[in-house]
Image (cartoon, rainbow, N blue to C red; front, side):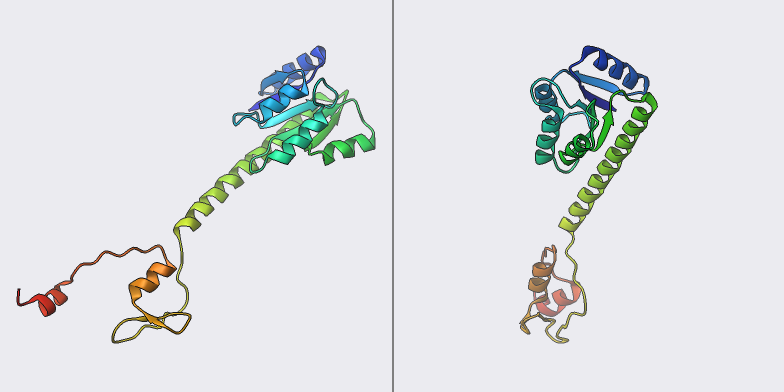
Length: 196
């Protein structure tokens, strides 16, 4: 899985990239918030992102805010990684749309565990989105007729909800996706066209 790292400090970036590669992630790196924003708006964006709070251009919190204002459906999982560790900073970061918040210096194993949580959330979200699309497609193809249909035993017209009688094919066309083609059965052929 690809992970975006937005970190302007070269040493911190190198450490993160080395760790993530050892954890089995493919790293996409930028050193400013503007480039992070450009990458996160692409359709082929990494689904996991680690953003530094303070960096040139847009800061990590601003990137989160813009991302949450635009994304829906299958959002990027964002971890803010910063030296800002006050309770108000954590609340601000999470309120801006970060999914997780890690303070520097960080524990390598904790970072790996939190990335694992992000990966599981992304996989569950993708699975849920796929199921929703399947259900929407199925609902688009299915209109159901429910209940008992009052039908005349002689002319076979159906009584609708407004107490009017109409041809069965008209009723079914209005209440389902059924389309009719006409033909003649053998009995009707004999009865109505026997003199041909």
